[in-house]
Length: 501
Ligand code: FRU
Image (cartoon, rainbow, N blue to C red; front, side, top):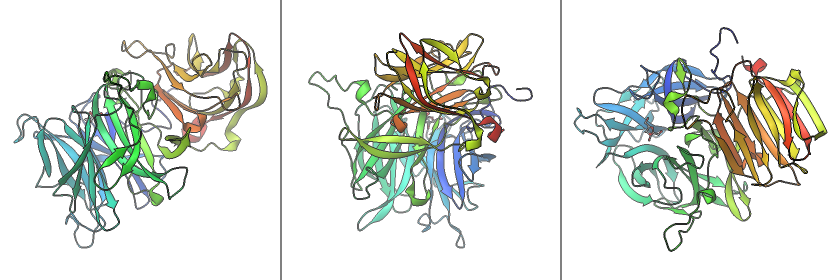
């Protein structure tokens, strides 16, 4: 559209200008969701790492705010988290003001007092996150390591004790390390976890939180999130999770895949993946959401090509926020994800089909439902087809294929002909996620934006998140089948553009 940057998303957060990566310090406080993030205030590629800041009353409409914590000649401000220090355990509070305390990684420069070291530091805010002061006693936790980073801190409420727990990584060792503190300033070692399951890259951005299995509060499990780069299931950076228990000291995994006697085994496919696409990294959860509702956001990009995506003057969007829960699938607790997004107004339905045969080949859907920012709900029966699915952002020889492949039993996103794929040799790709049919049907919920697709299959048991860079004019939607015919059981398309721009 004229007057609008071609790839700027409508329903995903981007900074007005410049590069961003990991979400940091996700926090709900006094009616506002805060999204801090790795940010370069001076350029459109990674560098000058600082914490950018945005806030939102509803996780949908974001307002960008001044840079929160800035790097300087001594340190870059790497990833971390924020806690509400309601009891003023840190002593940063003044005259009854509750301090927000950021725990971040100081990536010390060569000219600093700790050349090349990564250690954990504090900054605090006494004005609800608007401005931040670095603590003069930084760093507060130093292992003299070059790869100790990404602290996520939460309040642990044990039977007899309460204290702060930090999960961070020794990235090169593929290990999560846990520490405890009473005042956020002094930390003592608790335990470590890993290496385990996917170890094809450095471990980064961990998170640890409890969830009720199948919604039963008497069956609490702890979920340990571990992002890794490379070694993600789709190539490059990606996220995995472990389910188990945490007793206040040690995390015990119940989802570690045993290695066979040769030390191999533990196939990639069997790991618990947060997402099977290429653009869902550094996923972490919000602190302080009422009812401890677990909501996660990820960086919607990949370290394989992140700096090269063809967007300007901004680079990288955040994923849609996702509410997660644990459900039992074949006896094992698995993460279920639901996007928190613009809720489509039933009046915005541009297409509603129930029961329609899908013949072999591709059939364009009525033009009224075409668009660039869409919410699609589909239930499809493959029937005799080998592949059935939708083509979105179609036009002039391009299109993104989203469908089900019967032979491999998988949902896929094929972006090889999605638009501009030539800016990096690793970008053109097809992603697959294993998915079972239910009653012979595949159920898909899809969010399409100006430069991304997010697919939630089987009610969110598997997801695929991929960036795409199509022509703005590519707005066509088609339904297709190969090698046979199938059916649309139901299809609803909502145009979200009208409600958001
Ligand atoms: C993950 C990461 C973190 C680090 C940050 C630096 O994407 O590499 O480990 O803190 O980005 O920007």
